Length: 169
Ligand code: OFO
Image (cartoon, rainbow, N blue to C red; front, side):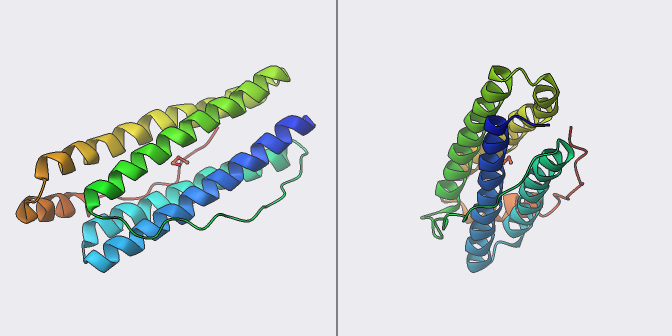
């Protein structure tokens, strides 16, 4: 049976993952407005990934005999001044999520739940990957500046991203 404090921390993180899904859906809509379909595709995959992250924890809490209690999801920002600005915010958000996963692991550590710590290792590695992927796009956008031809080339690259359901835990 999962410890009550840890159950609450997992519930908080499920909310953060669902917020991530919602935020990236707002970003997807932003790129639809810009008619940059490769970016739209990139965020479509990102939205699916965040949903999988939330559901991984949702299932885990149940598997451990706990209860999931869903809370309201905050309204995300819906507009950005440029693709570069948008990706700066993605990186900031992923860094925030990394800090939340670390905090969740601190709780698991505090209540000596080694099984939960081992489960959360996957999320920690995923955050390293997420920050690196976003950092790459951001670095390219910084090089592109106002070159619309180069932006369209990046858009073409981002169209190739595909979703593979992660095996969590
Ligand atoms: Fe769930 O990793 Fe991004 O936020």
